[in-house]
Image (cartoon, rainbow, N blue to C red):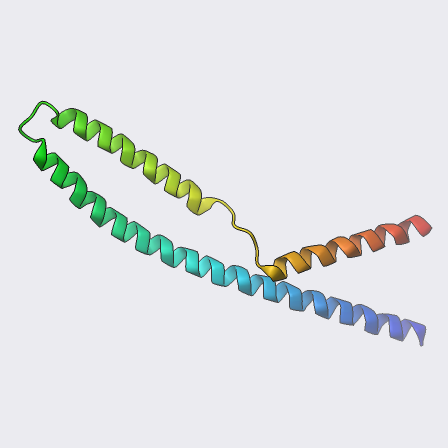
Length: 120
């Protein structure tokens, strides 16, 4: 009788973990899809805009001695911007509210488990 009640309690506890885990995964999945859509739009718009801007600048300084420094400096600036953008896209974002709840519940259970172990 007692074992049956404990098993039911453990099953209910596991079911709540599964529910929290699926909610956290859903939040992560939607954030990832939104981030990927923004990256695609930014890459396409940025590439076309930078190509047009760089070409206009190159045409403006073509017949001057500033042609080669313009190419080197603008190339370095574009590489720096691309590296910064890639770093920003790769860095981790914070999870949604479900991820925080799941983390706190796991911490509480670990504390209870440590207390239980100390009584043995």
